Length: 533
Ligand code: ADP
Ligand code: MG
Image 1 (cartoon, helix red, strand yellow):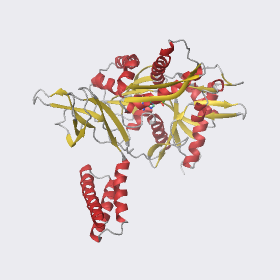
Image 2 (cartoon, protein in one colour):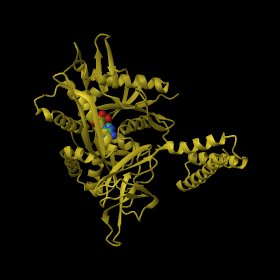
Image 3 (spheres, protein in one colour):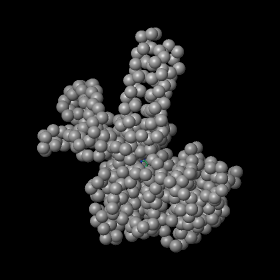
């Protein structure tokens, strides 16, 4: 058996490890099926053991003196870190994370891991790179190569079976992580990807967005008390957790209901946090943060002497790029739709695994993704088509190339007072007008009488379960003894054909036709059973 070379994204906030499985890069689940492992290390002094990952993160509030996060910021420095009464070098702390990843990953894939490729930010200097190699060695690993994070992200896209069509050799990687922001511009020269420019802010990331919510929550909580309280560490940590959850919800939902009991106690009385926040409000709170990333993008373009239209591909990396406001910003700056395709939080590790495969000579296949082939949205009356005088604006709810299963909601507003019905026209496609896209169907929903401009939430879900559900239903019917023979045969044949078509990944329209036929037969069977029963 050939020795495998795993790829590791040793991140400031989260780390992950990936490898090539039958030529395809896959992330390895580490803690409770999660591939993303918090880069947090904690010392349990009583047991004299080191704890890494989510379990360590959970100890942050209770054992702040024994727990360290974001050690990546100290790589290359010599100041030791104290965990309780013990001192560790930044390399040692990082080696605990590496060790945890590799140990668990070896168990999962059933093969010992000795060699790794580790990624670092493009701006890491020599001392920081050497410290990263040292961390690997301390974990008993051979660090085959250190590669830049944006290069790793770009590498994985070479093996993706769908591509953003472009003839430009320039790629922009926009990476918004937990505590850092980097934007890099790469030039593809044959097999080589050269970093032309790398700008960023080492003190700007998703955590800052959380902090805005923490302050907002704190104001809401203490407003009745006229700010006589000060925010202590334990409450701050609790509020940060709530803030992060809220932020993540707002990436998929237009608003979030926050209800948390006993966030704080004042003179023995628990204070609860109960409020609703809209995505728009959150975006307003964090507007300047987003603008700061825009400035860095402009800097990077300037440094590379390029204009926005020169950029071929734009890759979104880092968990915080899941916020729609990031995609909106880039859409405006680059005047084109921005897609999210590969998991932004795993794509650096996947790219490192691809690099590992290239080094070991592993054959590489295309990476298949379960993504939506078309954008899905509805008609809104926001804009009137100047030619036809009709409202024909296509408002996207689920963007193309979104990983499935997914569920996304948007908020819309009624137009006239006491509207009792809302018609939703669903379209799929990439054009700004509905007419130019494909109609999926129309649905009418009754509304409670309300003033004009009342909010209506439209939620769409794309799920694999939807397909399984149809098959499940057909199979249940097949086991029904009272069903006439010919219907059983039809069902049987259709289920087989449908499953085969799904596995073979046939054209959408073939699958759709089969699905329609199967659904009609299911309906027929159900009616027959009702009639018989
Ligand atoms: P790093 O590169 O710093 O290790 P990651 O790429 O893992 O960080 O990004 C972590 C950040 O991404 C955190 O701030 C986290 O809250 C944020 N994040 C993760 N998922 C989402 C989401 N769905 N919406 C908004 N932010 C998210
Ligand atoms: Mg990262």
